[in-house]
Every structure is written in C-alpha cells, then in structure tokens.
Image (tube, rainbow, N blue to C red; front, side, top):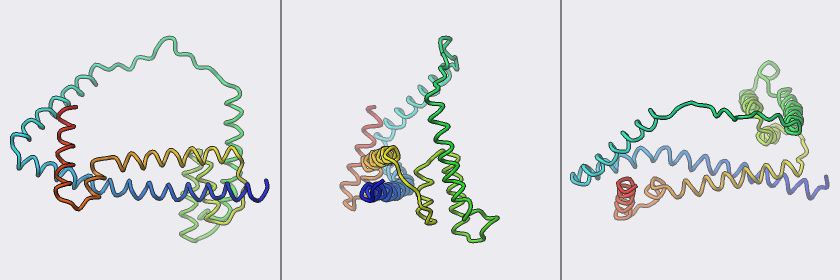
Length: 206
C-alpha cells in the first residue's frame, strides 16, 4: 500500500476516534440532563393542574394499551422459516476470525496482566478483549495505535470505518434533535418553557 493511501486510512481512523468521543460526550450529557428535564416537566405540570390531568390521563391510556398489546403477542416461529447456509459468508467469517486472532495476539503480548504489571496496559488488554469478543476489528486497530503496534489497513477496512463514522454522526444528529438536548442547551427561560410545552403537547397528541 502506498504511503498516501496509508495516511488517508489512518486519518479515517483518527476521525472515527474523534466522532466516537463526541458521541460519548453528548450521550453522557443527555443521560445526566434527562432526569432534570423530567423533573422540570413534572414541576410545570404541577403548576398547571388541568394540563396535568389531561397529560396523566393520556399517559395512563398509552400504558394500558402497551400492556394489552404485550399480552397479545405470541412467540410463534413461522413454519416456513428456512435456515440457508451460505458458504461464501462462512468463508468471510472464518477470514475475519483469523484476522482478529492475529491482531489480538499481538496486543495480548504486551498488555496481558500476567506479562506486564502496568494498569494502563492492563486496561487496554480488557478493552481489546471486549473488542475481540464483539468481533470489532476497527476497535482492535485503535488499541494497536494506543500501544504502538503497526498494522496495515485495507480498502475494506476503510469502508467499515466510514460506515461507523456515518452511523455515529446520525446518532449525534438524533441526540441534538431531542427535547432534552435543546432544553439543556438554552439559558433562555422562556425558550425552556416552550420546549417543555412542546414535549407535553407531543405526548398528549401522539
């Protein structure tokens, strides 16, 4: 692989690392802010009893409907379900397994607790093991970067990385579209109130 192509693929991997960190940060913010958002909704409803009555009635109705639907569901498996063995897919899976083993072994050699007593490296061993168990080749590459193991990315790897980046960007866009995110990111009290009202209206009318 020529140097320019190799650098381009390494850049993609760095971008994936950044986007993953960005998603984790926003997801953490949403997780922390959700509780405060719900408390604000409850406080607002307590200040508007009539609206609270309508809201509670609608939520109870939805809850009862959900329970009823879950009771009516069955675990039947369609009789015409056919398991089709795909030899080509089996070969690809075997190839991936061999690639994962090769990368994982190199990481284990310098991170395993029985070999080295360095917490940072031992933490990377745990991280790599999780990636290996999840069959996450790109995650193993990221650990390789952390410990200085050389590897060569392929064009197929580049496609996987780009798919991961695009998937994470979509998740970030979704997080930024939520009521919690919008509520958390405004200091304007009138705007906060409007967001709470929009949320309540949506729950009542949906």
